[in-house]
Image 1 (spheres, helix red, strand yellow):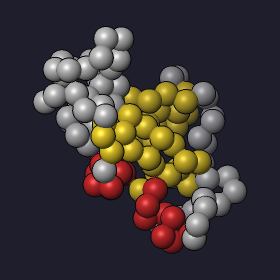
Image 2: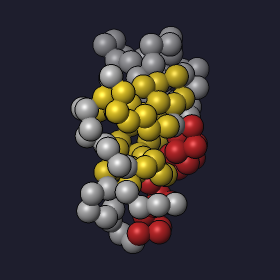
Image 3: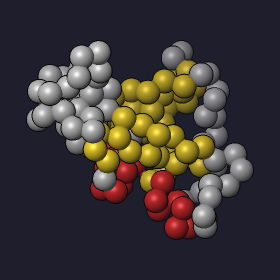
Length: 110
């Protein structure tokens, strides 16, 4: 798959289904899942307890439920693929396939 800087609504929806939020481990809080474009396994680390009590939700779905903006205490998390897999055309010094998406981490129950 060639490198392409791209985002799409389906990336967000798929990432919300593929990612988990693991809190309180020795590595702090980690968002783990697969890139919705290339399928590479990814792990995004946050400072210890930075995301405590938050739940993972697809950003567009949450905005539809909550109105125009996330609630106080919720966190919008922009993400991008950071895999080391070979993607032809990737600029020197960059990682990933070029895909980006946004997740919402929220205290609101489903």
